Every structure is written in C-alpha cells, then in structure tokens.
Length: 223
Length: 167
Image (cartoon, rainbow over all chains, first blue to last red; front, top):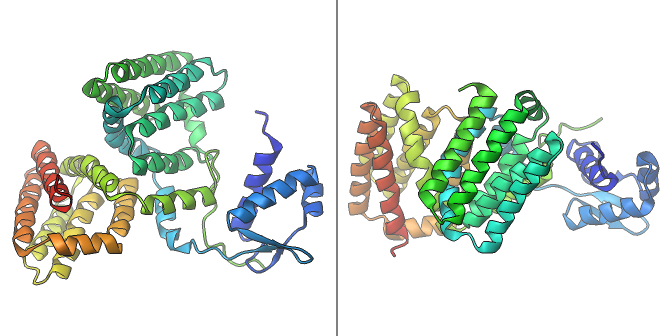
C-alpha cells in the first residue's frame, strides 16, 4: 500500500516523542537533520513541526531549536491502558450494545446530507479493491451513522474504538476471515440498514444493524 | 538514558496515542444529555448481560453495595455506594471495555456541575426511591431474569434523567 510521506513522518515523530526518545525540556533534532533522516524536503518537516507546535507538543524558538514540552496527559494513563487491553470480542460486544441504538436514532435524526454521506461510504466499500480500503470505508459507514445519530459522546467514542480496533494484530483477524462471499453478505446487510434509514424506520434500522454486527462476530470468532 | 515512557505507545492505522488522548479529553467534556443517553443505552444491556455472566460471588458483592447504599447515613456515603453498585454490575459483565467505559463515565460524573446538580435533586425521599429501584435490579440479577434486569435498570435510569432534567 503506498503511504504518503507527510502523514507517515508525522505519525513516526509523534511515536518517537511519546516513546520518550526526546524528553521534555530537551531539544529535538533540527529540521535539516530530520529532513535528511527521512529523505524528505525541509519544507515538509517544517509543516509537520508547525502542526506539532500548534498541538502543544513542542515549542520552536529562534536560535535555540525545537524544545519538547511537558505533557499533562498522564491522568489518562490508566484509562488508556484499560481501553487498549480490551479483547476483540469485548469491542464487538460493546458495539452490539450501542450501534443498533445509534442506527435507530439515525433513522430519526439524519438529515438528507447525512444520509447521502452514509450511502456514499457504502458505495466506496463496494468499489474497494483491497482490504485496507474496504475497512476504511466500512469504518466510515459506521462512523457516519453515529454522526447522523447526533450524540457527540458516541461519535467520539467510536473514534476511540477505531484506534483500538485498528491496532496491529487486529487487521490480521480481518484478513483471515475476509472472503468475497462474506464481503457480498456485508454489502447486503449494509443495504438493509440503508433502506431502513431511508424509510425513517428506527426499529428496522436497529434490527438490521444488530444482524450485521452479529454476522461479523460469527465470522471473526465463530460465536 | 531514556526515562520510562509514561504513556503507552499505540500502533494503529486509525490514530496515535496523542489522538487517543485528545478524544478522551473531548469525551470528558460531553454534554449531560449525551452522557445520560449513553447510560440509558448501555446500563440496561449490561444488567441483562450480568444475569448470565455473574458468579455467585459477584452477586454477593452487588447485593452488599446495595445494602450499604440503603444504610448510608449521608448523601456522600449514599453516592459512593450507589456508584459502587453500578460499577460492580459493570465488573460482573467481564467486558474489559465496558468496565473502562463506566470508569470514564464515573470520572465525568465526579465533576463539579454534576455534583452540584445531584446535591440539588437527590433528596432523602429520592434516595429511598432509588434504593427501591436498586432492590428490583438486584433481585432480577440474583433471580437470573434478564428481561426484568434490563427493564428495571431502564426504568431506574429513565427516572434519574427525568429527575436531573425535568422535561
């Protein structure tokens, strides 16, 4: 899969920062050194450092260089650890709790633009030629349903789950269980959800979403 | 020498540790209506799930929290055992993620505006009423009746919502 250099560089720098390679109060390598290390233009590095500065991770001072700032985020350490330790089936089971309700709420709350966005994500799923693209648009399909349900907490929570769901080993589960036949079945299940949403039929939307997630659970874990 | 990293590094195609923390921060600022809607969705299902997942020891712990809430002498102590009761129900689901979600929701409910609102709303009579709801919930779980567990929890949360934000 081709990866754009800028996002990759940005992710990698954050990872090194979070991993403690450069400690708070110390200097990070300068633009020129980073550009050389990653084989990218200095301009690319500059843009990413600007973004990191805006996010409060670093401070750039003329004549001194790039200083790593303290992060006040350690209060979340425990919560983060627990979330990250969740098993795949715990995640799917929680989605089975929540997403039928989101689909039901979306049937009531979705604007036509939001509905179009959901349909678009499903169409992109159907067009996807590899698993990574398919998963991206499938995730968008579900995320857009959350957005259409108009509960900001749940929309954010789904983003949180996505980060956990797309940790390294999880993609392997998907790869092993992904067949053309299952993909077609997921497509039909998406269609049922969309039809219910179009008809403003909350009960049918909840039912179709539940079926869809149950079928994913069966395919991944055989239960 | 490197110091011990404080935050675990997330390797995911959907975001970094920093993204994760940013979302957690946003979640803690969610609106009360959204938070209560989430509890109304999740807790009845958690109560129903516990009917099949709870061990005898779990049920004993749940009942003990309930009894301590009933016998609480002041609002603070009632609140602590009330929260403990709900949290022990989550724990008995054995779903790590659900338990974490409850911790997060609990964290949010300990913030000032929530405490202020509860102080205003939860009278002595309300405490007794909530304990009555808890009794039904605990009985349903102990009696392994998932429909009753889900319904009694749904009723309980619905009434709390109505008390906190009368329509």
